Image (cartoon, rainbow, N blue to C red; front, side, top):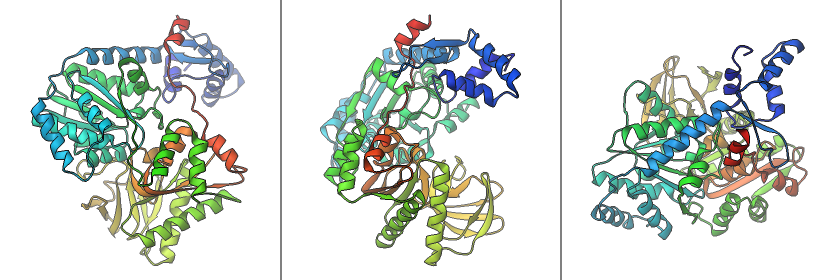
Length: 497
């Protein structure tokens, strides 16, 4: 890295578009051995022409980025401008009426906001964005648009960052969907490339980082395809650096859907709006008044109580969908362990067998809930697909997926597996289940809280340990914190020149 500071800055900006002086020093410390090496690399990076000093953040702290990150954002903006200025034939009034009429005959006809959103995405531009709170029916709206596009002969391609989000887009809209990683993998091999007759729909677009969004928009621009971005800038942001959806919406506009439809209870729908707009304390207050927020002496007690809730609901409604949630992988692993122990005590799991997975050896048993962690088109599974283990031998497994399909595979060929009782909040963005059980932790901010407490249709409960939060007031303050700014503004740019 002494020879190539650009490599250091690329690593630094992989998961954050901007960084502090402390972030830089911590990065150098991790990649050097001894004070002399630390001092030399630290000085080299601070003096590098690749380092760009930005305006201080809201607390007056220094912020930096790299020239490569600025180039990526500039390229993203240029690609979005070309798409927004481009012409797309759109659809005829006849196709739109036919699609809308079919949807009206369904159980849940479109709201006025959804109808306006359909008209927006079907218009003649080659770039359209739809933003909406969690559970506002973006997928249902896109299903009507899909029918109209397909009636005109367009191929509609769906994609999302996570497998769970891609599955839910496909389920909710009828658009054949896959992960963005899978799509880019195919493009790199010359397969499934976009063409002028295609519409690419990206759901949960707020989770996509700047560099990946740039590549996708440039591919669509090259092909003459149309791009539709659907998402919510207030949910969890990209794991990779940047906030491109917010940037595109500010530059080119978007249609907004604000009527929450996912939750069955009106007070829960109001709480979702409050979570979306940063009024976390008010939203948590509603759940606490309903008896759905509980403090415990320790986080271990909170985890056990969540699993007790989960087990009681599973007994009462065995056909319902439930998910335990936590922010960290360590908490998820512990919730999975407790859930398995509870089921074993009730005689619902067979004998454990040791299975070598990509994350190490794990115990699985017939009856276990299983989560797939890698896309595999031959099996028809995505990263995040869920199912129940039906059969297990020394060499093979058979799983009944939640969509009803059965998949059988050799354990040597597919080992990207985990237990599927609990998942991280990040993994669950884009998902909908009947009931959720959330473990609060100090790692959560308002965006994570919003996602965690808006995945359910029927009920959500949240529990916490008092060794982390003294009480509900501290819980609300911590879970209501804003995330750091993850975008390089025009003001920043003018200062960096």
